[in-house]
Amino acid sequence: MDVLVPFAAALVSFRLAAELVRKHRLRRAPELLAWAASLGSFAAASAALAWGAAAGWDDRAFRAYYLFGGLLTAALLGAGSLLRAGVRAAGPVVVFYAGLAVGVALAVPIDPAVTGGSIPDAASHLELVPARILALVGNIAGTVAAIGVALTGLRRRPLGNSLIIGGVAVAAAGSALAGLGQGGGSFFTAIAAVLLYAGFVSRR
Figure 1 (cartoon, rainbow, N blue to C red):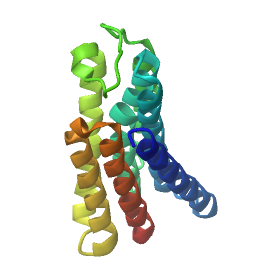
Figure 2: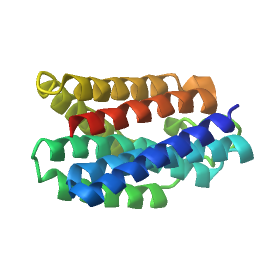
Figure 3: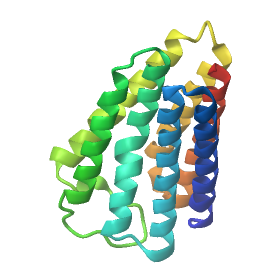
Figure 4: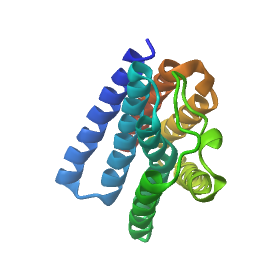
């Protein structure tokens, strides 16, 4: 179960991300590309969970999980919402942030080395600066942007924005209940990805 559920969540998220890329080719809306990248990060984080569950956690699996799940998903989601609201500066800002996140995730020391069969606690392996503080900033900023834009447009597009708020809430619940293991956390991720995708499409 701890392997199959995250693997299924990765497939679902990747499929939805690919569909948003297809829609972007037709409409050339920048928010669709940002949202696709966010769902793609969901998929990669779930794949890292499946990797850790199947082969045991090591530094490589942890770096992938932290990059896509801890650093990129929420930031890209929030950037898409801001772009949808007409804040074009969100584009170059999130590109800079993503480049910084990749560099940090690849270069930051992991001490002690990651081992074992359960999801690693970032606080036990990474220093606060720069990796954990960067994740904190990206997650808070992305979540606030996504929920703020959704709440602002709730009256005009109640269904789509409610789905986005629900997706963010389910993703947050999954993170809070990480003790359920790879399978439990990925179950929430898959539901969140479906809700977010439905919200993105409904808002167009």
